[in-house]
Image (cartoon, rainbow, N blue to C red):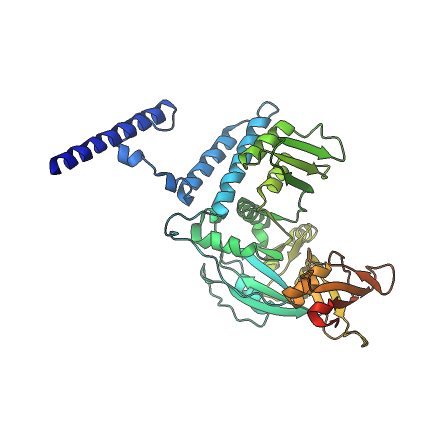
Length: 432
């Protein structure tokens, strides 16, 4: 019996070696491996590791190198579009990694409890004055020193302005290659994805250079600054293929390329409704990938006291730029006003039945969260449940009549007054 078992194991090992040799020969024939590979063990990658971050980053680097070496013209437009689609798929896998087996070592982001009416993330290179800015703007003391990487974790601070309580997160300085995980860059950018506004802190003498580098790192991690999301809706079906519908002519839009991009995202049957007139293939890829965040941003230019009058004037006239000097405490009030306006806050006052509105403590809703449902969630998540919510009476500029009965989808405007009514089964008909 022992001899038979040994003979069976020997035959099994021979079959494994034969299969491995055939697989390597096929890989060399198709160009996946070079014939001068050192050993089968060093070339073999288990299937479970094909989705690991290291392999994905290698694929991303190869595609980026191919895109950089490809000349841009009408003939290569389709090829570049296909590469951009594949790049979006790989970056999506990098943002949402799948665990295998025991889960592996997953890099966690910075944890900071959300407080106030809005969250603002402070991002910049080391030694540009972020910690001094946080100390000047809020009552929070952040460590300040003359060397780089003084801040090693997320430091939250809060300041109040025009009845709004705004939280600011001082994040560690990032360096070039942060999107690939260098210097805790992925943790910093992942924390920035949860913000309502991003402040890109740059040195005034190198404002354009640092702005371009920071925007590249954020765009690589799926963050688009000061852009509106494309008006595209994808309705998946079980059969029928890909169909495009639009309210205008789509002659300039490459439907064949868009179909291939949808196939890369494993969408085979769907109706694509396009309402964005100036749709580009890049914005279409962002809409299909579904993990792109559109966040408003301001560029805070520190150390303007070292610029000439002409340089300062050019910098101040650029859109979304706010020149300041933390050392001399210049324009700090202007920064507060710029942050407040960029958040586009809406102040809403609540009213109970048979009582006057409470104008002392408004509920502040920031950009993208101006609906009645958002206000209900800010009070308590259960109030936005249709089984509890009945209707709301609204007084203000967002309605035609005063009061006017509205639903959860109604968009509120600044200084509206609202009275929320619950169903009888939930709160015996009482309003809040």
